[in-house]
Length: 205
Image (cartoon, rainbow, N blue to C red; front, side):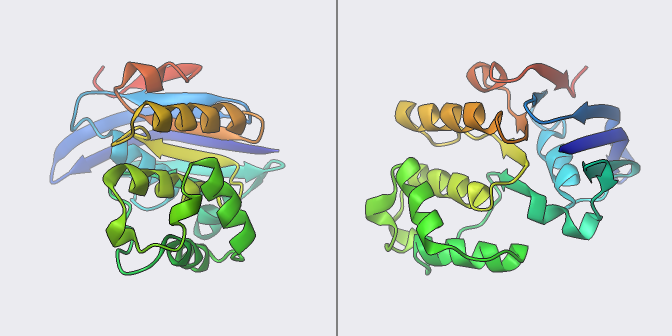
């Protein structure tokens, strides 16, 4: 069983405090929402959890059967969707997925990639370059890359960005299904997305 522990996280830039003393624990089946004004640090907190940004104070720990997972190995155990996540326009959707697998150090499975693309409605566009993708299609592809390795921890930064009602239903289904697999953290101010969570932390309070 996996678990996540965030202890007294604080982040400041050039002397300006973004947030402080953020602490929580997550276990499989739990969904947490991170809310707050624009600029309150929602995306930064998710990046800290992912190990992409260092906190000014505090620590993030992830465990497997109560044994700590080394920080440098954490990316193998999490999937992340974020507006800042780059897709390579000159590569096809499948080639992008292969690249993400190499970066994470996990095996690339073309059949699994196609299976998840079918789940989000991208099967017919799997071999098209991402240059031909709309913003909504790119957001769906970001969901695919986050799910490729069945991660126990799913980090979703504004997951409904650029999605229509059908796309939002896909996000909802993914969150509900992931409850059976692991933990989810959603950074958003959208009421519909926050409503998926069991509890919320407001960085503006």
